[in-house]
Length: 298
Image (cartoon, rainbow, N blue to C red; front, side):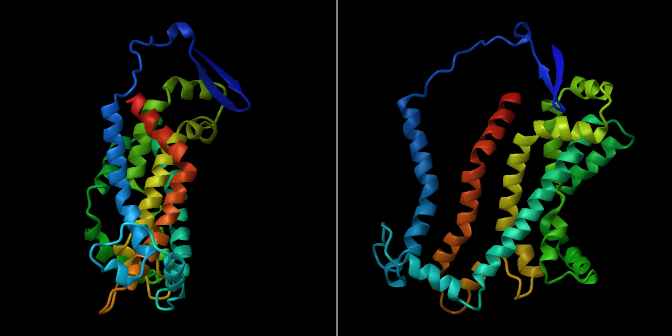
């Protein structure tokens, strides 16, 4: 085993003789397995398909018996009605949610990578106690902290604005623990020690060696955080005022009142789901690669 450094980045090279032998052959799946997988995929995609069907139909078609099975020609009209609704402010809600979810995702990934590296590879007094405290924060129900959090945001003068739904979620206990577990397995201690022998500082080790190795886990954590913040409803519904809605709050307003416009709600739900689908399409390869790499390491 040898260590080579090039252009500021260190690479661990394992000689062919030290590599573990391949003891099993990868075999193809049976036709029954393909049929089962196709059934699961269709079952998972069915709610999304019927959301498109309902969003592209008039209310009289949605409430008809039997219900429609194919998309109609009212999709553009229903989407236009969603954005034209002055009481909902759906376009502003999309921008607000995109801003909140993006800032929280970047912050959680960076802080979790730093803390995970520290807990996994640095030796300092009180490390285990601090890690236990971080893990304990994951066991506190979200509902239990709503009232104290609202009182804190009110005293700080942040209640009602986007800062109240962004600042409390810039750091994640789950993210720290997730990155700590991944860094413990993915980064050899010998690599850290070799970098120190070469004169690298702790931050240089993190930026040039640790963070590139954590990218697969960072992609998974980033997607999970973005989805959590995008789909969050309870805290934004309590904290935000009527002038700063998020997508989930706007959708609740679409379905409010004595009469529910089903086509309007489905069109708004479709527009609120598309950004998540786009994120998965753009970062899908990195996310699946990160999950597969984590599975192989375990």
